[in-house]
Length: 225
Image (tube, rainbow, N blue to C red):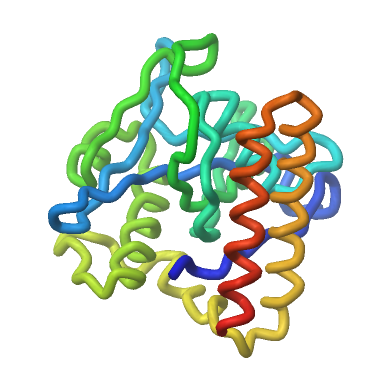
């Protein structure tokens, strides 16, 4: 059963602490034989190996930003699994504070084509990802993804994993007695519905149906909890 999705409700503007908001996806796939996983990493031309992400547009929730940016950079429409965590760093000659929020995702449809933002993608295991990722902050959020995945599948995480990370510290957010969980679930479903409406307006009915099926699935899971 998928974990209940957490959605950050912040829109552009509100925090005096953060100057730039962004969001992205930690896209993974399971290797059926042993339930290990591979992670999708992207390469930006003449730059770094990282995860698909981008800046929040006016009026978007962060989850909408993550869904949009993942599709723009990879060509994939993805199923959203869970909120994994945030990374914070300085940009523009260290004058602005940037926060990137990441969700775990799996690919539903689509095909990657090289573009101006991403020239290649690669599916790699945990060890390969740790070697290729350019930034330590991306390696840390990768560890958070692995902790989440290991907990969900009742597996022992890799020995070299940093288990003192954000996902471990916020794992109690997923319990049904969290007073904010109902609101967060509603916000996340609304974001998926809006994304489905955008797809339908663009004529991509298959992607719209996939997104609506996610909403129905998550509503059913909530009723069983």
